[in-house]
Image 1 (cartoon, rainbow, N blue to C red):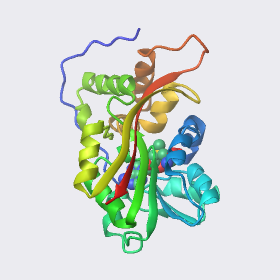
Image 2: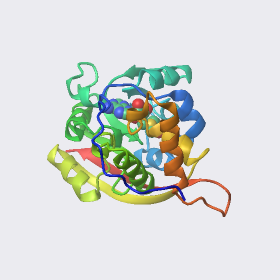
Image 3: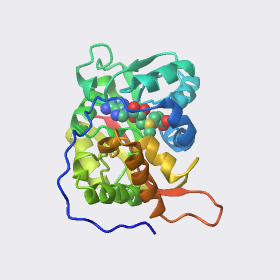
Length: 274
Ligand SMILES: C[S@@+](CC[C@H](N)C(=O)[O-])C[C@H]1O[C@@H](n2cnc3c(N)ncnc32)[C@H](O)[C@@H]1O
């Protein structure tokens, strides 16, 4: 086991990552996290796209699920805050992929005009932590009356072991992990209330535990998704690696099949614009 003793925090300072800083790498995403879109099929099924429909994919990433939607409906607009991910989505063949932050959707002249039959989102909403209510308001404005918002994101207790490990590693080094934690993992009651208060009727909402097999290892996962926590160590590659290795070393490795897993907890819902 790696040493986990907490030395008394010398309050370390560094700037927490700006919300609009693009730290996403489509290359790392396809190497370490192609399981994410691969596990998105149940959300697509819940959406049940129709051939005549116009759909908005919010937080589309490199567009793997967008392409799947494109085959099933009239048109899809893929939006994502990361320019690198949108570039990849275009390279992968998405017809309409645009760099748009979910928080800005509500003021978007072309998209927030009540023209979409459905808004779809997979594995993205929990990254929109700055103002999740504003994101829901944006989705509402994009939809036609009766349109549906179908999504899955990280929910309460998602990736709890890794998140705790990262908090521990930062605290131990004198940083306040809350400042670097980029995730909003709501429970059912919280998110239902948020949807209802913004004018949605919730048809279904549930938390789904999912033991998730990784492409590579926990270190690769942290390298891909943990960039916000690693911000204090950007200028110190050795310390950055030490943090990643330390978190992985304190997690159990499955001996059953020799593959790394992380316990995910998904929040999946279908809501209708009332
Ligand atoms: C785990 S990926 C999921 C991508 C894709 N939906 C999939 O299933 O493969 C999360 C995506 O959310 C995007 N994202 C994060 N914050 C965002 C924001 N504020 N607005 C729009 N997209 C955001 C990231 O750039 C990233 O592409």
